[in-house]
Image (cartoon, rainbow, N blue to C red; front, side, top):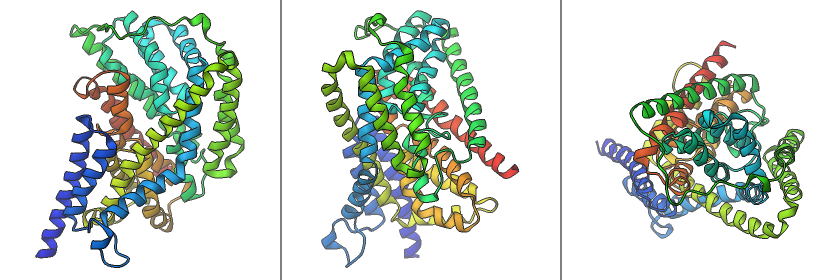
Length: 443
């Protein structure tokens, strides 16, 4: 009986810890504080010793386990975050990111303000620019487009998020880390199962855009209009921007080098981003005086971005030590049918628990990949399943990108903006995941 009570308390603590993490981040509490506090609740309810002196020799404790997860992710991915953030800042400082985005929006015009915003984000994301930098780069253009089209600005976060963290982030060939992490565990390439990935990406892009457009039209029909703010940027002087064909060269460099260095595994991203960074500096040569500040801002942004992710990875590292977590993992592994189904559920839940696609993969893959590979899962199919699955429940309200984009970039609230974000970055990827599983089962 006491064991059953302990299990119930552990489940309550795990669910309560996730709820607390979501609540604190939605309320604006820094994730570096919210993460450890929520993990502490999970540890206490699981009966985990809090400090090493209180634990038996070689036994796990809260503090050590949290920091092990935190520092492990930092050590594995810091250089990728660093180069990615600096690359994004150089693209912004040189005007290359704005030039590419403006070229797309100019061709489509305010009549297609929503589509232009989504496409601008998609091109930059698939070109290797960090999703955080993409949001900052495209936001001012989105404001201008939404103003001209007189669309409700509360849908700007949804457009930015949909174009950045859905059909581009987890698709085959994407240089974003969410597509690279499975490579080191499964021995695959970034183009694993590209045929199914292409079909799923097209579905997600079409369905997500149709749904987002429908939401915007309903709001307009209900009388909502664009709301101007004193903080809105003035219209940019596009004459000062570099040529768009020249501006796209750094993105082409990233994708090209990434393609030819696949045998380097995740380190291919360093070579690709390094090449893109060099091209970005050359494109931005007239703005050379601004480059030291861009490098500095990128380095600072990289530390903030990776430590925010590390904070939720640490939460997951504590959560995976609880009886509730292990019971849930055992239940998933006993699901009948294709092993891909169990893997998809496990990664989806863990990414949701941590509020991070990359964090969820980092925690889940070492635990589940040996089991599912032994169960006969095709490594390429498992790679694509895991990548797509990680991009679903990760976008719950406590996700760092979601909080940053809604609040810091767009100046909105979750109450006004999260509906569109959740629909396009949670529901649509889940539908895409179901399609991927169906296609892998059929073929």
